[in-house]
Each structure stands twice: as structure tokens, then as C-alpha cells.
Amino acid sequence: MRFYVLAIALFLCGCIAQPKPEASLFERIGGLPMLSRISNQTLDIVSKDPRTSRSFKDVKMKALKESLTNFLCVKTGGECVYEGETMKNSHADLHITTAEFELMVEVLRERLDINGVGTKEKNELLKILAPMKRDVVTN
Image (cartoon, rainbow, N blue to C red):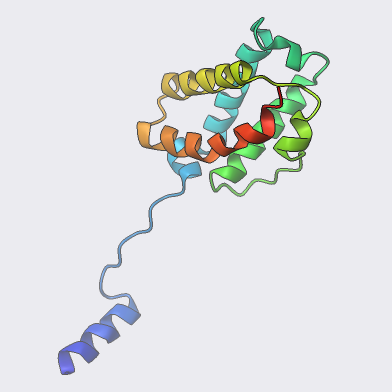
């Protein structure tokens, strides 16, 4: 009985090492600098690709890049503020096709790989973003 009381006392006082919680996806990806780099590179590519460029006509790219960075920051557990529209509202009138969506995902994957984001983190991020397809693809 004494052992259990002692063990509980040591645990409560922090004298016994407690396992560290895993870092957030935001931290493991590389934080805001990495999310900004990935957002900027991805949008630079898809906004100039003839297969997807129509969706970016007349878009203020600087604002879109900042918005995407903040969106990814929030979705990965960072302490950013995303003030943009919902995915459904922001893509409603763009008539995005499955092919356009899949190209964006392909470019994003490529950028994650090129920037050294780990497989586990890449897969976690893609798992978070995948359900948004139904809000983005309208054609």
C-alpha cells in the first residue's frame, strides 16, 4: 500500500518522468515558414499551369497565399487566425473539376516532398485536406 501512495505522490509532484506529448503537426511540418513556402510554391505553380490557371484569373495572389498559409496553419494546429471564407463558399462559383483538384493535390504533394516534409506529416496533412474535395469540386 505504501508503494502505491509513494508512486502517486511522486507522479503528482512531477518527480517521475512523464511522456512528452507529441508535437503538433504544425510544429512537425516546420511551422509558419514551411507552410508559407509550401503555399507560395503550390499557388505559383497551379496559377500558371494552363490546366488550372483559369481559376486564378483576377485573384490577388499575395492575399490568397497569406490566406492559404493561415488556413493550413489552423488546420495543422498552429496558433494562426484564418479569416477567409469556407471552402464551399470560396469555390462555389469557380466550377472546379476533379482533374483541377487532383492537379492541385499533386503539386502540393510534390512541394511537400521537395521541401523535406516527412511522409507521416505529409499523409496527416493530406488526410485533413481530403474531405474538402466535396466543397471544392463543383463540376
